[in-house]
Image: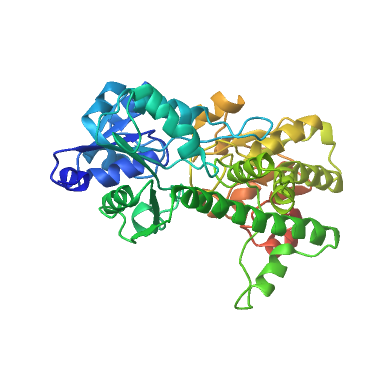
Length: 436
């Protein structure tokens, strides 16, 4: 009997190693069909899930309460599973080199608890070669088992889009790969249990790894182009959004927009690819150029906030500035690698200490990672400038009268980074309005 059949008949279990924005929704989805063990090193996170609370807002508290996932911080419980899915983050170091510490640590944990006949599938974004050249040796060393004989390995890159209620695990075609035909088929059939959109069988693990890392690199480059256009058009006193709306009427124009590129995917994954390229003797030109533009956008926005304050005849180093939104993207509580913090840091260089409000963000995470304490948006008053940094629905719904409440008397500066408000309306009301 195949491992897939044993899982379907609930004679074997699936484990999820890493229960963040990616791993937790996967665990929930599989638990509707089969028995699932959800493991994470963070005991506090496990207790939160056991209490029926979803801090990620990806599936909701009611779903967490109703799920049959066995949440645990006890790694030995992994021995009760035969199909392991590793979904841990793969960040970069301060010098933009890959930080494989999480995936290596997860491999050691899985290896220590690996049993014969198991399959281990990695979902973490990596450069081509990591699964076979780094992860497999760790699994073998920790388990004392032989890959290809006692256990098998595959790779199936995550495509979950945090905060997106349309493009979910079930509705996005899943790339799957295995170390051989047998493992590929088993892995594909297991994922087909939950992925309604179907799976794409990649020819090998490295192809699947490469496919994932270029997905976000492509988006990064396209957004960098939009950001560069924004810089150019700003110098020409041309509204970038209006230009893109006009150009977007052509059938084959790619509808990307300028913005802050942060988070743990688009702002990180290209560095994995360029790192491996440089290791092979090739220095990336296009990819790294895009990265440099996007990494500098926080500073660029801050500079234009200051220019707008000067236009408004405000004393810069005593200016009162509020920033609405701190997460790396809209309608998502995740603040990891948020480029809004770059704006905060750059404003501090001008002697400005902005106040920050974000009702959608994980306040504890922001405090831990950045030392930022949020204020209540209703308490923001007497500001010289308001910066709407993230297009949360709760901000998009604000009316002009709602915005006005935050300002002091005199000229008002509104920086609408994502262009969610009507420019003409605010300029007609004598605002100094600026957007990318």
